[in-house]
Structure formats: C-alpha cells, structure tokens
Image (cartoon, rainbow, N blue to C red; front, side, top):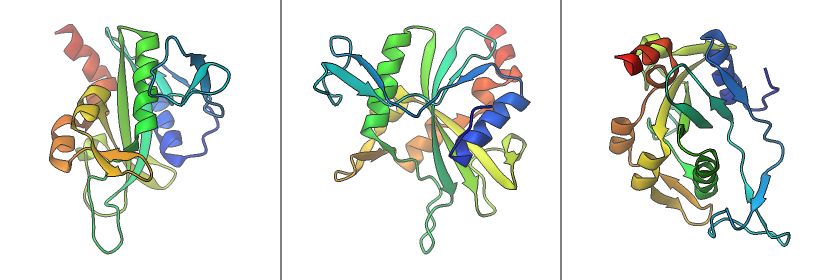
Length: 192
C-alpha cells in the first residue's frame, strides 16, 4: 500500500485490497505537467508552457469493460457541530477540471469518479450497512458519483475558495455505494 496522509484514502485503499479489486495508487506529491495544446485553457498555466493537473488518487480496474479514475473526497457524516449536515459533498473546481483532463488523456474505457469517503460520526449512514467499511477504529461509507453528473449539477459554494457542491437531493439520486461500481457483484451485472 502507498503511504497515505489522509485516512480517507488509506481506508479506501484498504477496502480495494481486502476486496481484491485491481488498482494503482497514484503518488500525489507533485502535480503533473501536461502540454498546453492538450490541456484545457481554463487550467492554471505556468511560464513553462505547460498546465498543472492535480493527480487522481487511484486508477481502479475491476473486472468488466470499465476502469475508473478516482478522486477521493473525505468528509464526515454528518458534518457540522451545531447544525448537522448529512450530505456535504463539496469539491474545488480545480479538482473537477483536473479529473476531466485526466479522463480526456486516458480516453474511452476510463470513467472519472468522485468518491466521497464519509466517516460516520453519528448513527446514520450514507450507504447500506453491509457496504460500510471499518478501518483503524473508524467507519466509512464510500459514495461514488460520475464526474459528468456532479459537474452538471454543481453550484458555487464559495467563490473565494473556488469550491462547488451538488445539491443534497441530486447527490443522493446520483451517488451510489462503492459496491455498485467496484465489487464482484458489479462484474456480474456487466455480464448479464
């Protein structure tokens, strides 16, 4: 396993290993530089004539026709101390742009996903109890959303921080448990 600084990513990687789902953990210490002619004009350009992309966290290739470019987003479920918020799903626009560019580079057969790793801190869960993951005395519910669905519904959360969020009702409609994307049961669904 790669050394992970964020417990959400470490938990997701442990889940992939335990379930024996083929994956590659990406070293995210440095942002990748890509040629401007291929990159999006909306990305941050440097003086070297290249654009900088945030790395994806994992390349996941379960059995079946699709592989996945995964960006993990760690959140608590619920978040907030005074006012509980159960479906916080914010992301930066830079994360979305970078994931979209990686999808362009990898091409067909690679679906970009935002996987929200919700650490459960109360007695409710974003996924069925059988899909919860226990790792190092914490419990997680991993919810995946296709980048295209997220981007289409995303609304500005903070202009200052350049963050967006999907409305909770739409997030709940589009988001599905990790098991529907990566498990052996998903493999059988592809074959049916």
